[in-house]
Amino acid sequence: MLLSCPVDRRTQWLRGVLDLCVLGALARGESYGYEIAQRLDAGGLGTIAGGTLYPALLRLERLGLVLADWRAGASGPARKYYRLSDEGRATLLSAGEEWTAFVRNVNAIMEVP
Image 1: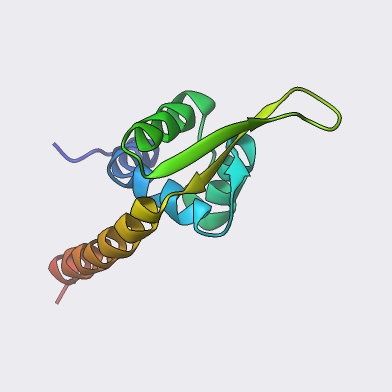
Image 2: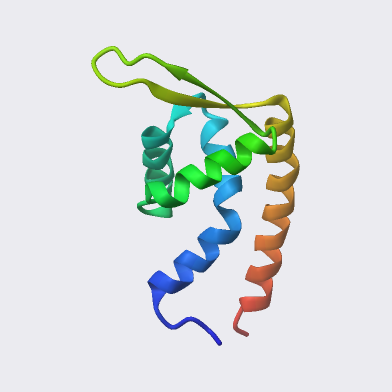
């Protein structure tokens, strides 16, 4: 069944690509959760709730694609900063190429003659 609501479609698409987008956001430099969410929003993905983002970050950390460490905050609580591991950078490059090819194929299928 095709999802008729644009919000439902966006949610479904995001499930499949969020990990790759998080890796892409971290390719621009290390960051903490809220800032990563802002990067994703600025990139056009919309608001990513913490209940969606933080499990993705934990999953990527467990896979060894992201490294994390806690740092004391200058004017607030400590923050967990995330950065790409070497494996994460390599995964981003290879998966990014695969994603580009996939999108190209989907776009070709959806062309209306």
